[in-house]
Length: 222
Image 1: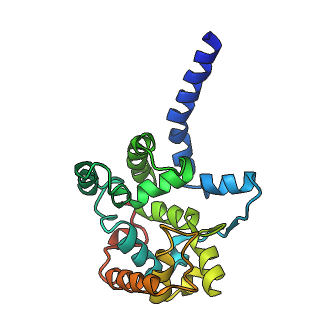
Image 2 (image 1 turned 120 degrees about the vertical axis):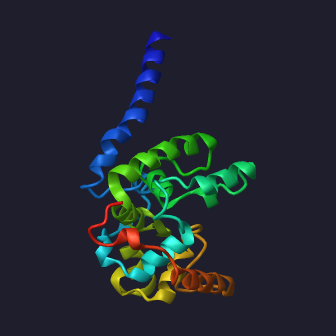
């Protein structure tokens, strides 16, 4: 029992303190996601090509912000306004309160299933990452670790896979189609969209025109 207790305590300590090292490390080293690691372990396909934020079409950036986190430039990793709405709805809108920062730390450090425990870890971790990474690096990591199709990770691999062009050359319409795959990358194909998929993409494209992305200007690290 003493040995088991020791193992449990060390495991808890490792989980608690590992991000203090790994989050700063990710400012300089391109991180992978836990899902990518699982794909490698299980022999699944992994297609990922890292690109800097300056190598991504502004249309993609605007579409992601408009679709996934419209207040990305305003909050500090956690959108307390949206989170409060989740609490008032008894957790029914869990995805709606998940900021880009929260999704990024989940993808890089945590597991995929939606649980209260994961969310409790995700919130302080997102606040820490927002402070260390800043907005540009956070979005850069997010775009490069998100899954955009079965085994397709990162916006560069996604643009090449679905449209045969680099992330820098994606059009506003293509950007919106790509972004609509993020909630269900295994079910939605941006290259062969359904009528519902196209309708959703048109909505995102319209919202992207008014998306606030000033915090992502070169040299800005807010």
